[in-house]
Length: 224
Length: 241
Image 1 (tube, rainbow over the protein chains, first blue to last red):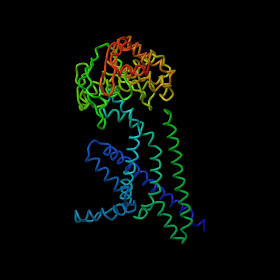
Image 2: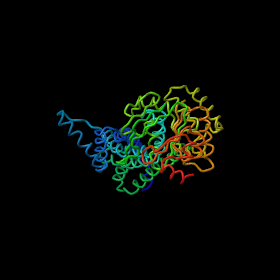
Image 3: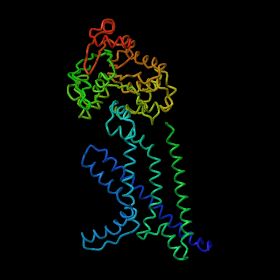
Image 4: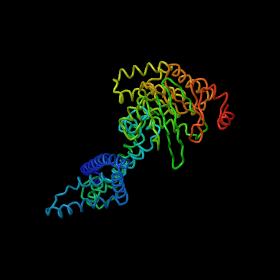
């Protein structure tokens, strides 16, 4: 049974699914960081409107399940499109999945970035300002570089979470690692072994990323 | 050089500075002394806009300080070096980068020139060999001396010191005071908030004594320390001397 389930063909199928899972996670974390920077900038902004908008975004995303957000994108966007234009929208599950997870991640990354910026000692702001640097210069040359160091560990956790949560795209028809195990499992009436294999692959990915992050952390810690 | 008129600053309803007026002439060294919470540091911080005054005016080198106008505030700040109690060196940069960051970004000095200037200043305090060290590798006294040189790298007309030795171990106080003393000898206009009475007496041209947000008295160190006029100054000196 084991040889049949883990045949070269099936393993290749699972690895193809792994590539999709990684693609979803990498794209989503990239979108998440970009949105997170925007959200953090809005939350720290002097404009009350921007602060309120950022708060609504963060509370909405954090307050509802990711599976629900994903379904909303998958089912809701074509529906809204049809209401607005009257014609059908040919959706791409992979693209929608990446977008939904990226938007979800943005809310969490935004909070991470904001708290890392706030954690920089106020004296660093004052020292920069006292030397005649503008708000923008102090932010860019002093605060963000220091915040960056603090943000590596929590952002790594976020990326690891996304690798695991990317499995949710299997519910909207994307053939990621999780979906390949279901397909193989259905074929052999044995879900246990493919799931075990997928679990191992997820573990290899997440442990590998932790190790890389630890290396990066040591590298930027030279000034401590 | 510095002109302060009717300065008022409240913190959550409490007046930290309550109607303070004084002026500092070019090349003058003024020591600002008084008990903790008397408003000395707040007064000093208002001079370069780190605190926004609630009322009154601060005029630096003929220009009125306006905290709301960032461009004007930044250009005014380039004329004033500020030294903090806790040094506030940039922890992600080397000693040399700490000193060249503002000259390069604010004064648009080219890198080679800024580095030459910084190395010259580091040589003056005997820390040229630390140029490529990160600041966390330096002692408190070394950090504070680098912080003073970082301010001097902007070639300011005025230097403001906010309790520059209060966070230092006792054996490191002298090296920092020596660095400030050498600035006084070079005729730098300075205002120093300090608890080092012997130092104030030696270096200052004038002493201003504050309590409860007001200036109680001021005068030459010789007159003030020998014959304080007010009861509060007498009580204060009796405790600290």
